[in-house]
Length: 486
Image 1 (cartoon, rainbow, N blue to C red):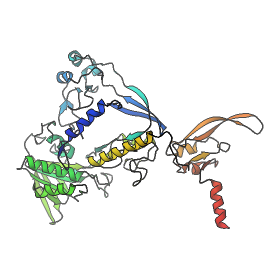
Image 2: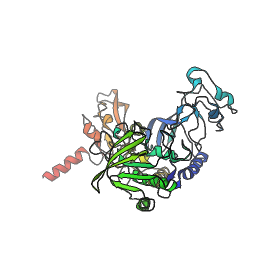
Image 3: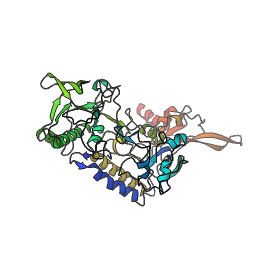
Image 4: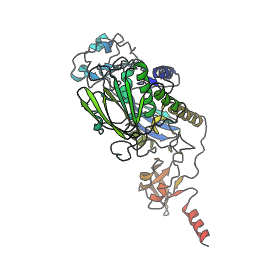
């Protein structure tokens, strides 16, 4: 959200909404912020999660850095692509991601810093009055215990390398919607002026292409089969902002269907068409060809049943969204359920929409599926309420139908632990009094009832029949069958 300029449908300033919340989080007495960090390992269960956090080396002491920006200004290496602006401009090797960053601490990029690469330079350390630069800093690990975990890994736009029919890799003037967002942002690479990336000229004809990579049922290997949900609304927002600030610009939007189901969403789309004169065309763009400083757009108008040829100055692609790459590794650590698109799966779509099947793990935002900002905020509030309800209890009421192991029958083969999707089964060495009055140590399965969800996978996999499910014991099921057969 920090990369956005305005938010639909109210066109509020994104930074004005987000920045005060970020400051509140950083200054809250009961919140400890681990910025520039990653989850390395998660162990334990609900109420007792032991989380190992990798704190990546900034080569800047967070406690000493004041965020003055002197090192950023003096750094001689200024040709590093700026990730925050999606590579449309450059940043120094030592940088603060954006002006309102929390915490406002500089970070040195070891891949481009001359001092870290070859031991030459050190200018940032000399100009830093706080003496915060530390070239010897290394990654560190912190292990903390938490009672609950809220997953909020977010999303990223998909890669467009497989959609070369739009000439994204051939022309700088074919951009994604997020790149367009940065172009129109006052803190972006062009200071908010709408200019073509190729030559810095003002565009007079802009074509927006919807559903690039979304709803690709026929070519799922290229894109995603699902609808990305937010594209129709942010394209309408972009079109309105362009027409409002630059009335001389012609704006075309090619769409499959306009999907605006939220509160005041359809009215927002109608304003773009009726008040701002945005030309919505139901059809698809077949090809974009760079030619003579223009982008030749070949498209179809399905309502009028004709082919269109538009000479555009700028083409904006509404790329599909997908889960962040960190979602799948994190899901494995949490033993959380995920679908084939790497979105986290909720425990129940109607009754438990913010809970993961793994006890103590809750979901928020686009990690569960495509969502806009209001829906994400409401789900985050629901997840926080669930966490409060969980941690406020002295004891938890669990599912009585959990697995149990007959230790005399268990041979310690690990078959049940290998199939358990929740990681509820571990193995312990236990002493047994044998029939001949000797003592023997055997490896047997142990089930954690707080983690077990009673799915029954272990009972099926157990070759010795030692695993059983409370409430569905083999003896009980056989007794039911015998009663039915009488």
